Length: 441
Image (cartoon, rainbow, N blue to C red; front, side, top):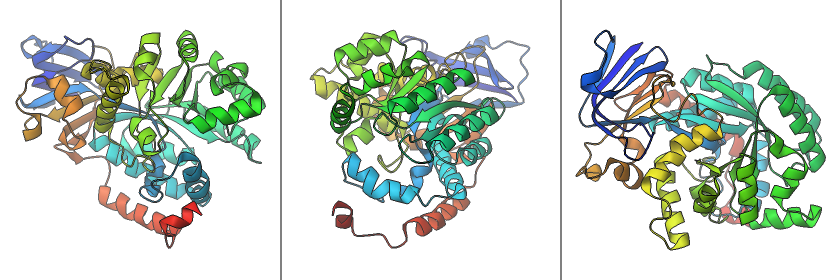
């Protein structure tokens, strides 16, 4: 594919002032070869496909830096519960019934939703990861995949071996679109000794660690009760921060811990809507950024959100930062957009490949249709993207140089078949849904 996108507004995300009004992007195979004014496209570039439209805005593909894709199967099943009850009484019992085929179709459902909303890359932590990788391959998306590890379960050692096999099999797979990490679930499910084993394996494999961290007050209190330290200190004592770390949530972090994370180049993925819904708290995003921590943005799973919409997450992150600090400048629109693109790329260790629209980088591009009533008049495109845009405004999505969404239509997957398969899987997993109150008994 030699693709030329021209006559559009280009937002490369290389700086707040870098906006090209009548811009163009040239793509050869999977790489960007030109970004700039339409009039400057090299005369010898001969595209076999051209996309044009003054009503379109091009930006880098969004990065959902923390989710559990197949939990689309549990969307709407267990709502309005605190995290501990939600996990132990509702989610984990259902997950014990999961089959590989369930995870495959649930992941495809997530991929369909994410692609249609402009998400080109996601970081997933779950089970049956071979099936997840197959779904990613079929969808055309880019993904960082980690097999979830629970160190307190009898099969913890087996899971570690499966994780190693998965990384060796899939790291660099799907023509380089799949990368892998190790996924110890959280400090409260992975004791120090087990975490030390994970670190040793991560070093051997040359991969990072994706883990939940400091999500709730209960987690912080429980870890301190068991080990006499905070969750961050527990991970540090276990050597976790000696390898690249993507830590989801990071809601309850002290200033000293924020400085420590910055020194260790650890990344925090904030999931504002999930944290609000589960009443976990508000992550100190502004403080983390000020400390020099890489901050990314994620949706978490669809069971605790309940969608995979990064446009909503950007808006929620900005609004929460402003209201929590009583400062309207706490997280400006451009910084929020950076969390969903540049920050996500850095958090996944992919900043040399994605996150901005620059020559030499992978062609992961999203075109948003600005010709919508809620995006007019066109005073500030960045403001509109963060404070007014919707997932349904996405017109075209390109991943690795391949058009996967065109005119709002998914080209790589059949949504009707996927939705039917997921309904069948959900019926088998849930059966007759219990009354909501029974979950609280």
